[in-house]
Image (tube, rainbow, N blue to C red; front, top):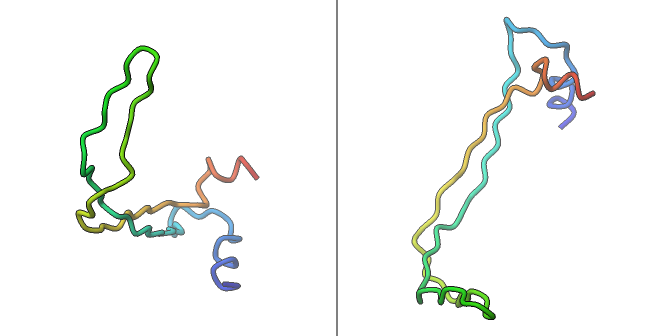
Length: 73
C-alpha cells in the first residue's frame, strides 16, 4: 500500500502518466414478475423475487494526477 501511495504523491508528468484501475463485480438480475405500474393514490409495486442472469465486471481507468484532480487538493 505504501508503494501505491508513493506513486500517487508524485508530481504530475504528462510524459509519464499515472493510471489507476479499479474493478467491481456486478450481478445481472431480471424480474420474475412484471411490476404493477403506479396509479393515482397507489405507488408502483415491485416484487423482491428476481432471477439471476449471470455476472459481469465493471472496470474504471483514471489518471489521478491530472491537472483537474490537482486543483481540488
